Image (cartoon, rainbow, N blue to C red; front, side, top):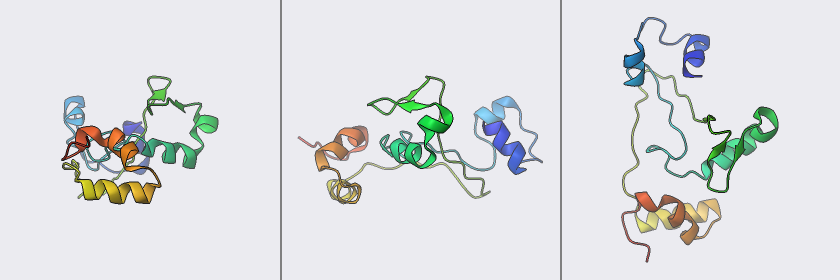
Length: 124
């Protein structure tokens, strides 16, 4: 899919990158995805799936833990801007979790459950 997007959007045509260079992310743009360092909340996949009606249009489904089935399925966001760079979200503080929970309409405990590896505090 990455190769197809690069070809169809005609960005990176001059790069002539090897497979190893592609794996090392030496290309223009980024492809962050829910559940990875730049977007640690797996539950955001539900928003994407709802927007795209993925179950109907792509026959791809989410499990209750937000894994995609069939297993080879992937999702993500493509940003082709030449200055786009990968980044990681730092540890998340309690006040950030409280704000996020309010904006998502979920309990703080639910947000803490999904973001546990990224919390800067012990929720217990």
